[in-house]
Length: 203
Image 1: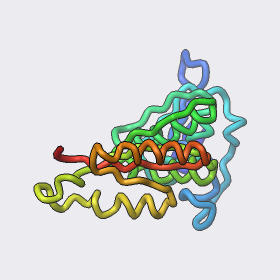
Image 2: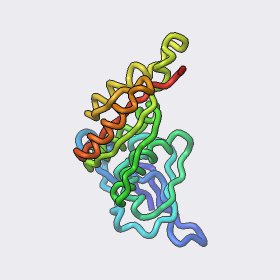
Image 3: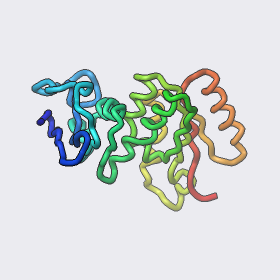
């Protein structure tokens, strides 16, 4: 079965279900519910699909990797097979969201480069689902600015957190660990998301 864009449902001999490629089921061709729409509706709803053994995702264009479709397909219990570079989209915030909804208290641990790659999953978990997830994010090269100049992580990390409206505390020395603990306690008590940004580099 062909389901635009570039989405196929393939039955393989010996498999109990099927293999699905590049699942895109939403009407819009990007992460927002405004703007360009697909020309034809999806021929089948996710809930109406036969049992799925695996989902193959070839690349991370919006019309091939749609996080809302991925999250709904994941609820079907399928395994995901992706090339290098895409795994980060399906990890961290999405996994933490699933753990939280299952009754756990997860803690996201990523570097700022992972933050750059996980924008739509972060938006979905923190703002659409309003889950109070907490993250510790390594701030690459912050303590090495003199010896490693030009790392643009230093340009974009804090503005991205500000843009996503996530409250954070910046930790540059071990003496600030009490601030880290206090921020975590405050966010957990208030039931709101939060971030501790930890400077990385020389001691």
